Image (cartoon, rainbow over all chains, first blue to last red; front, top):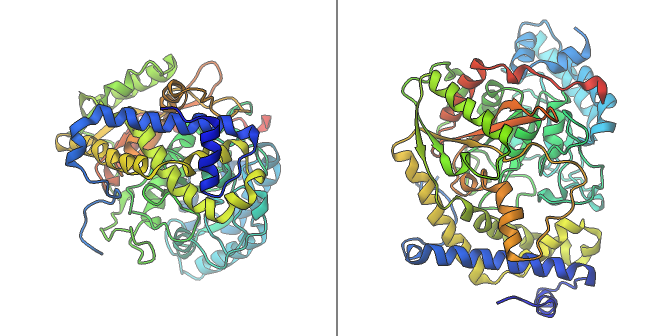
Length: 64
Length: 477
């Protein structure tokens, strides 16, 4: 799914941002590209995901 | 010794002269201030020069040393720091003119540590606005590469790398999320370290990429880098992700012998079609040198390396953008650089499910990287596929998802996997291009908290070669 320019304007408004027309195309391209890239990774990893929790990447040392 | 000769010395050389009372911190500081006066207008490396502060600190250091109160190898040498860290001595601007008077009443932990070691803050370095790569305009002038003024020092620690390469400080302190110390270090012919996440306190700065931001030195040599990390590293209760592990005397663990060291060459990066021929040749020659030094070299692959780029970029951009949305983005959107604001705006729109997926994917890739160290002491890769880019870069063209892999991933695939894995990674100079006479770098990666390994391998390589002894032709600036 590709987000349209209008989608991007609405999403921006939802977080309190008003994008100038000059920026919408670039923001849309970046948003779509990143979301597609992460979806591609998710598809490539498949079931591997089940073995990992989305924890912050802090190394497993004992508490300080 | 004339000013330009003093500033061309390594930190270790300056330090030895100061320790032996053959060089005064006052003389060294004045040499740097003169060099900054002469070169900064061409380089735009500094946003603020703390001349009076530095002169006062230098006089104090000279008195201490004369009285026998020598503090150690950093006593009396100068440092500059990326202008995203808090300093009482100067405002913290994030390279954004709206923050030109942003005076914070605290010092970053790294500033405290350097000051306690007797080092002298000489100024604050230029950067991509907000410390995010991809700026297209510069409120304090566009930084230039001292090796070739038509080229960039590369972001985001641009000013730090330019200042260090041009001899405008004894050591520069940068910040590395995805590669922002290592890539500028490679572009400017320096040693640049991304330490293990948790090794150096993040307290006291705009470090909003809270799962990936690290602080590391850029220096002329690997030995200098090791000396500085000994001061920067250590647990800090004010950084909740700081880790209480022992800090080694890295500079005393350096050797020329790599016998028994098991090195993995990451072949899918070393043979990437994105590599320019001269970068590839320099890397292949480097591997041969490491083998001649006694290392055992094995070919390995990191099949998920390219995935590290979108996973880390999405998650760390969201972390940063979330903070900046609240502080600046809503109220000042149009006053922010185009490349930075559109990158941040896109990050603000990411669904929570995409963020969680990226964080989960990071754990998968991290496990793949860390598994390499079951049988190896370190990995080596080229640092960047190309030398420093030409100035005047525009925002990365992203008209389709395909562009993302072409325009964004190819330039970052060498650094992001190791940022994501939270391993220490060191960029080391390993040659120059013939056409533009620009530096080339390679990268050494070790298991978490084994900075001693990357320093050992990097130092041995440096001692077997002479690239690090070259200096840019500053008279031409």
